[in-house]
Picture 1 (cartoon, one colour):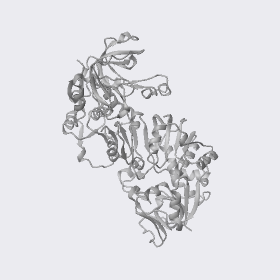
Picture 2 (tube, each protein chain N blue to C red):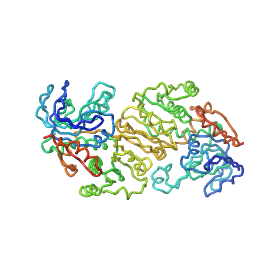
Picture 3 (cartoon, each protein chain N blue to C red):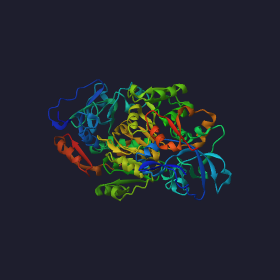
Length: 319
Length: 319
């Protein structure tokens, strides 16, 4: 099969063997997959991952030895493959399983390929109302919903999403839908026009003076300096939700966290069900966020394009 | 009067003018003062402070134009001098007042001097049961109590205090008194013997393997690398209380905060009342933490001594 592989460098392998089936795993024929900032960070060394990239996908189950009812279903998949037996799994934190593999991120081949494998327990059926190219957004949209699980936003008036990238725009829509008067701080006029369309306030980063007055700042910059700016925006005793994972460390002065008694909350994967529901109801607009659709064979160009400033979602199609 | 001053370098000024009285301020004759890690960090550039150092003190009120009942009282003082009018003061966060000055730390001369001034509202009378050299610990002990205000510890079994310095040992005692089975990770055998005396478990940092299993880690290392070790100790979705303020930034990879969805809580000043109560009841042992008592005239040597690894509290006496 074809597969986009990272192993020190990026390459497209046309003759990669199909994924080996393991007990409980389904084989899924990938239809479409989205390129995410994490994929780009992996090519810069993040997680030390080697293998097939990709963790945002929609596909069709073609084999399911243990649970035949899945065959033929159109599915998306949770990316953490967990043991179910460690202390964290047993305490309800299975997304943090000590023995986990993570699709296209850690010790498990991903979805930028003709086929991918995942345990049936990781799969969610995609309702007919959700098209393939929207279903590709389920994983990052779930990550945006995670913010609502972690931070109480009820009654909060001063909430900022820092970063107008893919994840930032998803978070902004999710927070707005939750009744929160969110504001996006970005760098790209065309993305801020998207915010206008959605009725979400936005400001150019260049126009911001650090006023230490925001109750919650969600850092979706994908940059090590995002936390620095977040510390300047958030009010004392406020909350910074940290979404950015980056390969490189940056020398940051973290004293403001202590002086201002800031609460920094790391936030990763989220609830698929809520993301699927939002896409079914079309309460979140993802279609406007698609920058270009490209074929898997153009995978190298697609990764280059996705890395350019201002480019939103690049989708790979496997047909 | 005599005063220990930082202005690019440290110096002892024998002829510093007495502090200018402002409306509402009391004049306090300092009896004893403690040297804190923050004082040492200021001499490395922290906060860009210039002036008389020192914010842990006990003294006697000698002038109090607005509130004569304070005259002759033995007092300790809260270090944040606040406006009472800004949005943060009005919302109950006056320790974070936007217009604050901070004793010996920001825009206000400190207590390593014969006299210091503070508004009457900042003062707490010291009960007779608390000796001068114990009263010097009220301010850092209050900072230790702040951890209890910020983190729910009820039922938590895996709690680590990282760092066996002055603040670490105070935090450990406060957490133990709150019924928490705390463990101290340190570097100095003589301090870990103190933990033994207090019935607090301790381990040498060199013996620790990062197991990501602690529910709460309180970083009292006073070092930029403390957070790095804390991230290795804390379990996913666990809490790191950050107490270390340091002048220098360090290039840290903060991805574990996101991946493990860690909650980092900055923690600064705390409740004086509870610290005074603990010292009155002698439920916290501070006397064993005094390394040496030195005269203000020996201030330069005292600062040098306090900066040495393994040295606990150095107290300056003004007599």
